[in-house]
Image 1 (cartoon, rainbow, N blue to C red):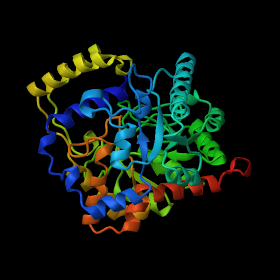
Image 2 (image 1 turned 180 degrees about the horizontal axis):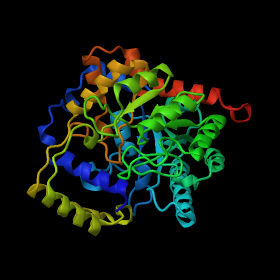
Image 3 (image 1 turned 135 degrees about the horizontal axis):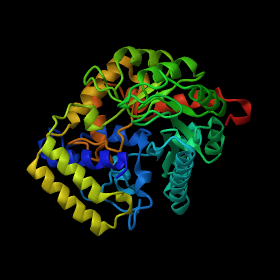
Image 4 (image 1 turned 60 degrees about the vertical axis):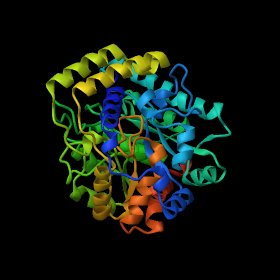
Length: 415
């Protein structure tokens, strides 16, 4: 199983195992004010890993799926139910070998994943539309369709060549993440067990920043090391984002961001989009027996995107048995809101958004899929944030950054 798939499966397992313990309101109990505000906002999420599902046998974005029964948290019915107008759909590529063959494999995988996104849009033009600019997003939402921006998580599909970015730009790419969980030829990851390789961005990574600025592509520092974040902030001529990152002050995971860097990000006009991946919100006690059982289960599952619905159901039953035997307490909506409210306080509501990592490991008890998004609006209203603040969090801040990034691009690439 690819790393991203494994994180999703394990996160959903933990979330569903004890979801009944979450102290949250039911959808029916969400107040009218929160519901009305949520529906009036342009609601965008900056990290939708849903493209990993698009080529699954028998799976359709138009059908309503169950997150605990189909490894899926995003589909059109639940987007409508949760008021999610769209966001950045991710071209994710696991980090492989960094040789010529590995680079070719990453390049090909990235193009296949990007093609899957464009195929979804082409197959359902009445429901989805590709967005290239902030104005596109506003227009698409007003038309009643869902907004499809394209982003890349882990720059390995560029095959160590910054100039390949122009090809992805031509195909619709508008956000670029440097690394995933391992170092690559462009920079250091926050979680590579070998530690830093480049002490920040590599020379190719610095060239990549220049090329992204020239084209008008938003740079994303999520998953990258703190030093890569520092380099991006220093080198980029336009604001940067963190597409799915939580607060290090609340849980000192290397994947999270500290308060000092949050303030620096805000001072440069950037935005941090808060992650709902439970493993970055609260510590999870280790259990050797559970880990071994899950590792063996992962081997049996393999690449889940190739499984039939019946095979997925069989694997789910096996997983549920493991969690009955070795239970784990999941992160909850309360935990997520602690991170979101802390980051709002430190960075300010003009510099915060939501990037929950749906279909890539995100989701907590009480916020299991995108149908539950109005609960965040309800909590923000209860915390005293204004309607303007909340609309900025849901999409206004992101679109401001996109406008600034594209406004600073070379004239030949300026929308």
